Length: 68
Image (cartoon, rainbow, N blue to C red):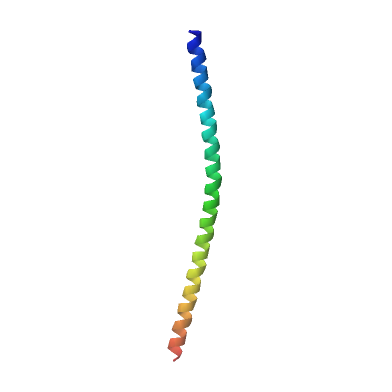
């Protein structure tokens, strides 16, 4: 009976180590994901600026062709 209890406790300790290791991996991945999300926000802002500039170019081109 005592041997079974010790074996179970060893299994529990091993499982706890695995859980702690997985939690560390999760935290690390969350850090990486936050950096990726930050970069995606920057990309979206740049795309918005590009669209604005393209609209300005199109308006300027239309104004020139009307003036001819």
